[in-house]
Image (tube, rainbow, N blue to C red; front, side, top):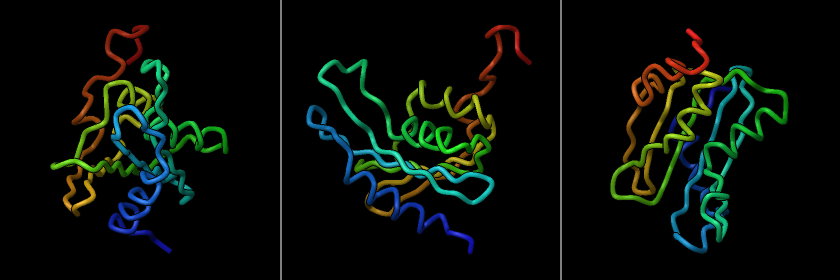
Length: 133
């Protein structure tokens, strides 16, 4: 059964509610869909040392890789913001490692959403890095 983007947004909102964000109160949820149909979720986990904080998107990617999935079709990212929030640069680069043209659905808790391809949000992700094409 194919899951709709709207269903994935609802799942991402649910997982955002489990985020650990005592410092920013900025709850983010992510749902990553593998080409094989498996679904992986992630939420942000903050740390008093902000550099140790892990974003929802990377948590979902790490869960997928730990489960043996490295081929992704789509990620949905939600946050309780006025307009849908874009992933940070670190998350964009991690996602590009696996699928440079990944479909990215950004949404907020109010039902607004926007769809991009990762290549629009992070063009040339490997240019200049170890001379990879």
